[in-house]
Length: 106
Image 1 (cartoon, one colour):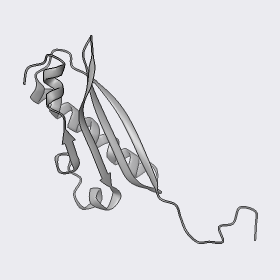
Image 2 (image 1 turned 30 degrees about the vertical axis):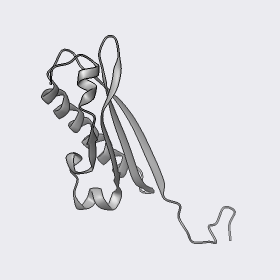
Image 3 (image 1 turned 60 degrees about the vertical axis):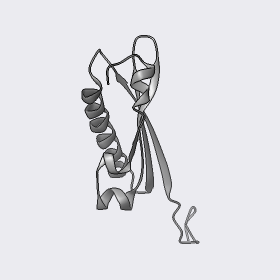
Image 4 (image 1 turned 180 degrees about the vertical axis):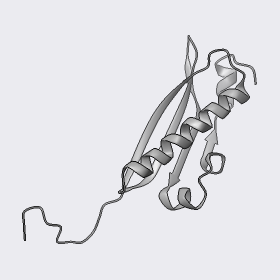
């Protein structure tokens, strides 16, 4: 057998974490929420598509204003769950109080 051969036959699953920033730009919360979902959906799909050993993805979308930042959306999903239902609202947790903390309209 060559050097580096895997004699155990097991493959280690990996977790991928992605942190994204979303500038508020004075937009209302429903628009920002839609943008956050689109960013999270694309990042989750890309993580699973790009790396076959990734079995779990965590995507955090942080909302930013000129003065502060706060999390708006966190998605934690396994590959199996994402393949069965690639839906951000199903696997995501929204931090809608962040809009209040940042002084944005709900």
